[in-house]
Image (cartoon, rainbow, N blue to C red; front, top):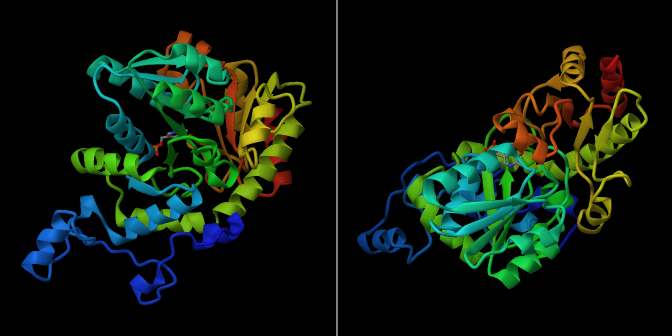
Amino acid sequence: MPKHSFFTEAVHAGEDRSANYGAVSVPIYPASVFAFSNADEGIAIHNYEKPGYFYGRLGNPTVDALERTITELERGEDAIAFASGMAAISAATFSLVQSGDHVVAPESMYSTTTNFLKHVGETFKIETTFVDASNAEAYAAAVRPNTKMFWVESPSNPLLRITDISEVAAIGKRAGAITVVDNTFATPFNQRPLELGADLVIHSATKYLGGHSDLTAGIVVGGKELIDKTRHGAAKFYGGNIAPQVAWLVMRGIKTLALRMERHNHNASALANMLLDHPKIKQVYYPGLPSHQNHEIAERQMIGFGGMVGVDLGTADAAKQLVNNLKVCTFATSLGGVETLVQPVALMTHATLSLEERELAGVSEGLLRISVGIEDINDICSDIYDALG
Ligand SMILES: *Cc1c(COP(=O)(O)O)cnc(C)c1O
């Protein structure tokens, strides 16, 4: 498709009507198995010498349509969809690194990715050095002869720290390491890491791509060679393939991605600015605020600053009291849906980390993560204002 505005692309990306009788909405093919018309054709398709489908885990027309869609939106060459973000993360990791290899990753990021990399270190002897990812030089300093992968999550969960993606990807290229960016928080509406030099992009499509808190899915997108490696290795052996019904739902979500993200960006920015002056709030984290420690990098590499806001209320009691008082916003984990979700991070998502790890990650006990939804901003602001008491 020629380059159009992202609003147009989000609606039309991945379209191939000729394949589906002109159906405007891609059909859902639930089939787990596809019949062959003759011996030669069957053998050729089965052995990947001819395009076609034969078994659900290894390819499906509905899933293909989703993979084409995200490939276009992230400016990749190919993509592969999974049943969850963690399935995408584990598949990419096991396709790119092996025992004896070394990984460099942020000390503050989605806690399950942290725990996954620690687990992989203990079980498979793939060691990770956790660094201050807002300092690109920290990646360079951590490089060893066996470093194979740079992990980046920007903006990071939950503190919205920013990594200079082009700088880290350039260091990775020099070091012979593949740079993988978890782009879940930004989405391709706000940031396109492949254009900045990253090799692979990961999504938890459970969040903004799906956008309605009604599915779990994951995506890996990037260059053909790396995606082929992931597809024929991890996807084939480890499973974790997305169901066609869910792939269709993700595509349904993506049709309104641009509209939703524009509103998420606007609402989050308004909420962050309102909370800045509140006497009960110790700190507001939002990459769009000039006071954010990496605002300058965010401004350079992001198109918009996203829908996530971090707020430090100082104590666990204050954080608990606020979620108990909410009337419009919802007290729940996860993020990226149309509804505003509020979560005391240290007490929940990041409770799996030790106190020391939480401190290193900068997650204080009064920290709330707010996934600012698309409701009317005045309703969101007054609900949180009232809940602050
Ligand atoms: C939620 C999330 C994941 C994991 O995705 P699942 O779909 O829950 O498996 C990975 N990275 C980030 C940044 C996330 O927010």
